[in-house]
Image 1 (tube, rainbow, N blue to C red):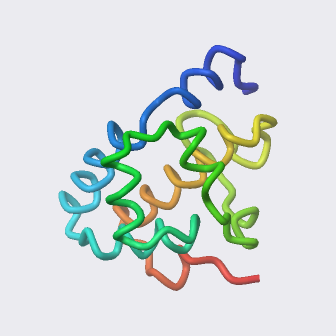
Image 2 (image 1 turned 135 degrees about the vertical axis):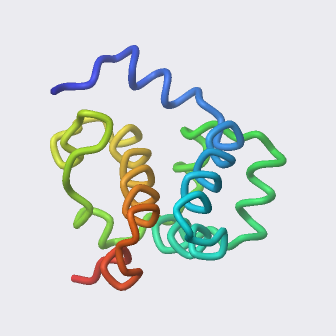
Image 3 (image 1 turned 60 degrees about the vertical axis):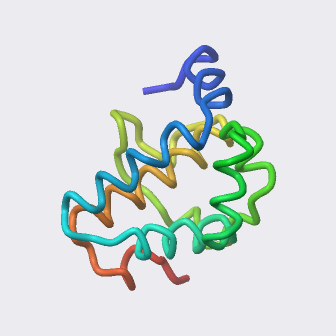
Length: 121
């Protein structure tokens, strides 16, 4: 299922601060913690909790968020379906990176063990 240019543009313009509270609610409603969410975000992007807070206050877009990120070299190991898209088949780099984060948050909320979520080579 290929993404459309409009879909990619919508993700690029979405602010991280608008999505972050949904990530927190999703994991906490399933018995996981905000600290675990931050561990996942830091693994993927290199952003610690303070940096995430700064980016939220700055109201950065996903485009800026991922431009500033130091993406984990093992991120390509994140595969599977998210929002009807097979992650490894998404051509647009930014959309794929945003879906990496969505997939990790989903796995955390579903109770997957942290050592499985934080992929190793």
